[in-house]
Each structure stands twice: as structure tokens, then as C-alpha cells.
Length: 233
Length: 389
Image (cartoon, rainbow over all chains, first blue to last red; front, side, top):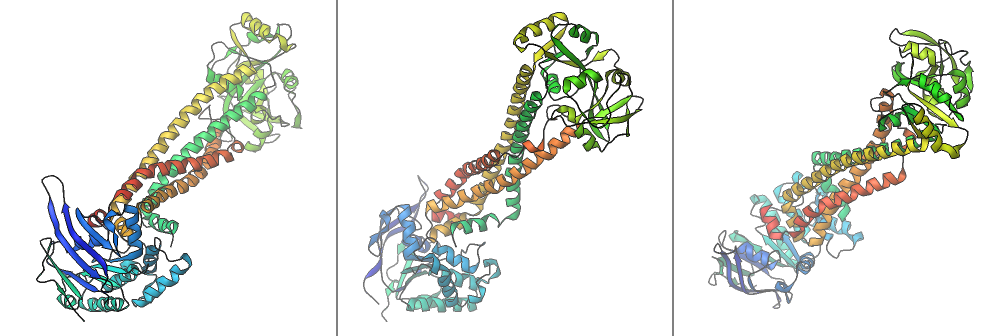
């Protein structure tokens, strides 16, 4: 595992709401995630794990603090630059798959390439390779509604890899799957990690957490240091 | 995958919504095009027919309304009549050649038809009529019919056929068919004036008169003399045409305003559809942003969607509108339900400029209608979109 931080968060604060009704979702979070590592964000529901993941992915903006992705302070980027960052450097996998329902499995992966740097002529081939990688080459023309939850999540993982991002952010990727599907999806996640991608996962799955290089527990919006750990392999 | 393909997949995902929105704009455009096209046709037809009148002055009952003036231009019947004696007074004016007309309406072969009562010899000379088939009237009292060339074709009538006319359904025989004249005479049938007056119980009356002058530089003098001689109204064919076009202009304007209201309603239909689409697809908007779509890309997707409604609706609307203007024009002309539309002819309807500008107009309206929904969609933050979707 390389030592250089690919993700660095400094004194991050996130407050939702205005006026008197405010929710302090994250307080003074500082973490550093090395390139190529496998990290898990754990903690109870509603304590701020997903908020932190979304801020790292540029889906939301912090109230205060800094987030560096590959050395770039993304809190200073405008909306358009943030979109470019998401297209090129970050792949998202959501708990509820979030595939586009009117597109086939193959088209969902290709849709992600619309805003990436994959040449147009290579998009179809690459999308098929990714589907093959997650074992769904026979489902290329199936719509999400024709796929099982596990299959949808595998398409979602393939989509996250469409633009060959260096970071994959996953929000409870197995949280909505049966155990058999969960095992299949995890197998693919570990394989992707082996290929050198930096993976950050929000999870309630203790078995998955045990395998993490880095573990961050978020409690009441704060980093719970005693439970957080750095594993050495 | 590209934006256009993606937009198409979005449009057709909800077929019911697509069809209803598409129909909204198509019907709006169809009414716009049909009314515009019929208006243009009416104008062209009235101009053509006025040019074919072949007379210098029309002598009409006093205080005749503008609508009836259009009827005279288009060779139709008018409600007011005048005494036949006035024709004698007019004929006495030196330098003026006058022929009377008694225009009546009747049903022939299930179609509304105009029958003109004429003085046989005088009208033949005045109008330069020639007989194509059969023979012409031999006297002003003859119980016979001569048909205009189009009239014979459209009603499927020929020499020897009989037509029941008047309250007593008196059978009168077709004795001749005129050569085409490129005027309204082609679309009418004729009887001697005295016969027409008898059959339609209008003894002593005529509808209007056509007059020719021997010196066109003295037109004002003749008009003044005519109006001083009897209680009638005299107009040159150009004045009549001007009056007819003025009234047609206001009719056209009214028709176009109605059509624009229909289009505005259709535009609100698009806004409604697109707002619903934005609301329903909030999560997808968030997903698109998560996978790298910029706000400008989201805006483009929704504007294209809206524009495609306009393009498809516009093309369909133009096609339906033109078809309507042709068939409705023919129908209206046949049933004679609307005096103003009776002159519509299908050949005048297909105007490339009208077609292209109507499609472009539909596109512009749809894009304008899509601006607000597209802006709303592009303003969402990714988290707002995903969490509220």
C-alpha cells in the first residue's frame, strides 16, 4: 500500500438547515486515505457516514474544512469542475443501485462514459468488457427491471468503473442484497481493489469492515478515534 | 450512447404522456396551420375571382353589407334583392352595358349549388361564353339549364339530365355545357332570367348587375350617374376586391388569434409534461450528476426533450393542418355552411414557407416552454436530487 494520500479531509464540518433549525451532521473530521487502500466508514445509521462519503465524492459541499482529492482542494471547485472530477476520478456505487431505468445494462455503463474521456468508438467495447468482468455479459440488453438486485449492483459497479476512476466510493453496496448476492458483489469489490483502485465503503457489514485497511467510525458526526484503526497487511 | 439517443429513450419511456403532449402541440399547430392556410387560400381565391369578374362596375342593392359584397365577388347568392325595373334604368345610361343576375341556391345531387338567372343573349356576349356540348338558350322563357364546366363534372350531369328545382320540384332539362371560363361561371348552373324568377318565385327581382363602360377614364362619372339614377350602390371591381380583402384580413387575424391561443395552451401542456418529468426524474438527475453530467448537460437533455416534442408535434400538426384545410375547405365549400370559406381551393394550400415556418414556430415554442423545467432540473444539487427522488 502506497503511503501517499489520495483523499485527505481536514477539519470538515457539515451543517444542514438554516436559522434556528440546524443539524450538525459532521464535526471536525480529519482523515487521510492512502492511494490503493481499502477503507470502511462504519457507525450507526444517521451518524454522518454517508454525508462524509458524499462530501468526499463532491456530491455535496461542506460547511467548513477542506477535502483534497489527488492533492486538489475540491471545496474550491465550481459546479462544473466538480462534475468533471466526478466523471474522471470518482466512481459511485449506491445502496439502491441507482441505475437509469429506461436504459439497458450496457447503456447504463455507456451513459457514464458520455461525460468521461473514453473515446466514442471504444465505449461500446469497454462497456461490454466491464459487463463481462462482473459476469453479466449475457444481460447486456436487459433493463434494470429485468435484473435481480445482485445483478443490478454488479452493473452499478461496472458503471462506476466506466471512466477508469482512481477512487470508488460505495454507500452500503450490499445493504440491499441477500447473502448470496452479497458474496458475489463483495468478490467483485475485492477484485477491483486488487487492481489498484482506492475504495471507500460505508457499511454495516462487520465481516467487510474486518477486511479494511483503514476503519473510520463516525459517531454523532464525529470521528470516533478508539474504533478507528489502520491495519497493516 | 450519446445525448440524442438518451433523450429519445426518455421521451418514449412514458408512451401515454408522450402521445398526449405530442397531440397537444400537434393539434395546436394543426389548427394554426389550417386556419392560416385557409385564410391565405381565401385571400387568393377572392383575388382570383375578382380578377375574373370581367366587369368594370358592380351594381348592387343599396346598403349591401361587406359579406354580401364578397358573395358577389365569389359568385354566390346574396340576401338582398332589387327591382328588375332598375335594370331598365341602368340600361338607359349612355355608355353603359349592363346585364342582370338573379342568383339562387339549390341542392343538386346532394351538393349545395348556385343557379344564375341571366338574360341569355346579353350575358353570352358580355361573358364571352362558348358552348362545349349541346346548345345554348334560345329564349328568355325557355325551361332549360346550361351548366358551367366544373359544375357538370362535380355533379356528374350531362345533356338530357333533368334537375328538380323550386318549391314544386319542377324538372328542368340540361341542354348545354359551357366551355371552361376560369371564372365562377364554371362552378354554377344557369337558366334564363324569366325562368329563374318563375321557378324560384322571384318575379320582378334581380340580385345585382354587372356593367361595362365605354370609357374607363370616366369611371367616377358612371358611378355617380348610376347612384343618382336609382337607389343602388355601385362599386368598381377593385373597390369590391379591396372591401372583400379588408374583411378577410380581419377574419384571418381573428382566426390566427384563435390558433395562437390553441398553441399557447399546447405550450403549457409541454411545460406541464416537462415539469412532471423533472419532478419524477429527480433521482435520475442526481444519478446523472453523480456520474459526471454537468448542469449544462442536464439543461441540454431537458431542452432537447422539449424541443423534440415541438419538432414531432410541429411536423404532425402541419400535415394535419394542411390536410384539414384541403378537406375542410372542400367540405365547407360543398355544404355552403360558411360564405367566407366557400372560395377555398386545395391547390392554394401548400405553401413551403408556411410549412417550414410553422415547424420552426412549433420548435421555438416548445423550446421556450422547456426553458423553465430544464432550468429547474439543472439547478438541483446532486444530493438534493438523489435524496428527494
